[in-house]
Image (cartoon, rainbow, N blue to C red; front, side, top):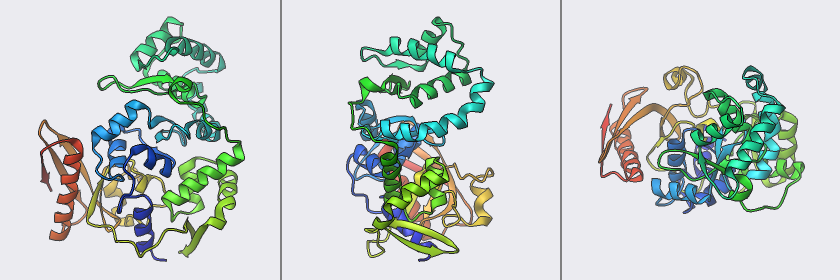
Length: 359
């Protein structure tokens, strides 16, 4: 296996190359979770992996509750399938809470504050209500709970992690919360071992080839937990060695499928990049600071042949979107044409008639 093989298999398994799914919920279930703290970027990430999807397709699915946005893993927001949200939170929440502990102490958040918050939020939302952040903050203040910006964020994240609330539909551009038990029908419970195995299965099937260290990063689980999950599914996976690392991937992965065409304009935090601890197969070390001085590659990225060749920005107008390309090196005419096709797909996703590109 070569680094080129790894990139090609990841494009296939993540359904960027030759998408097969038509509905957001099917793709999200397959992927396990799709990072989405940038909501607009998360919708574009889903749409690029679907056949014929646009912004409205994803927004409607979110409004109906076909996909849920909540805190699981690391911690950050992810889109998850309703059938998965409870067992996934139960598996990953202990680690997320531990990571958040320092912030909780800094903002004087303890079990007493969280208990009072839980009661106030439950009372405010019960009966199928969906309230905006400002509306919930007012309810907390009425209960005597201070809600400066960071304090409120951590209170609501804790409410997500204990399984009290999840995303409701948006009101205009405002996000709302709903009670998880009212928003999501009851599902079959998983014990911790079952959940550990299920998450590993989803990850290596949809994100492979990947290493154990990649999975530890993506899931936020301990090395012991991640090893146990991977160990239980090794019989279902292929593996290959490259540069001293063992890469695991689903048996149905193959290089005989059609090679991924053209270019991609991936959003920030896209799973193709953010779900791997080691990103060296995707970007040359000499370009890392150009992609993101933080070394995290959390910007919008230009992808050709599975590699990051630059970053991009966009300005969305009423009838067209302007895309600014910041390539690491001069673009060939072939790459310019491929990126033009990707820009056209993005404009169509937004429901806009036209686009312009500046380099």
